[in-house]
Image (cartoon, rainbow, N blue to C red; front, side):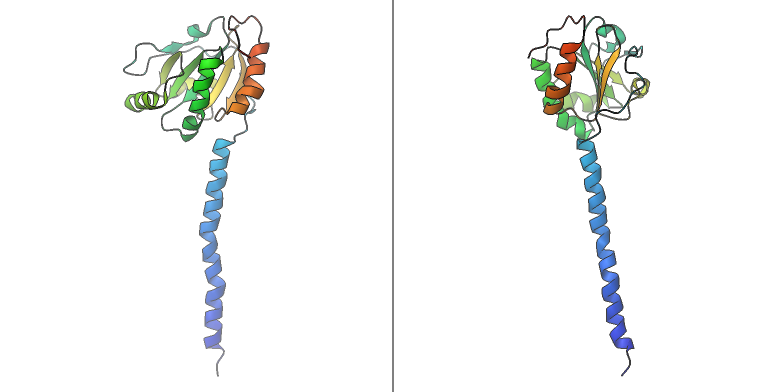
Length: 196
């Protein structure tokens, strides 16, 4: 009796588990990617910390009347949030931004990044609009000037017009409580009143 017939099924059994690992590996990679979107490193260094906000003047989202420019930031602590309607982490952080807009005592300005106006307007209508003003960064140039890696990113601007802090990725309630509120309360010459 030949061993050939016995070897063949054995080889198939050895090969099958290797093919079976591909979906497992793909799922693991997808899981790591999604986890990194929701748990980014918030303290990525920025060359703009303690430097003036880049000069810009963005038009409004088509269908709105007011845009957003550097001049809107004068003499106050403010947040600048770079967002897009197609951004899944932006949707995750939006309820936190909305709550912060109601209670944080600091205006939030939006930079709508590479978005179509109907999509951005529908997104704001669905989720609410926490922004004092929004500028349409259709070509992404202003986000590049800020050194943004993607969306969402948020910058804390001091009353003197310098960037005090940068958050890469979605803002969570823990970010608000442990980072933003203490930072904002400690900024000098603020005309904002930060609620405890």
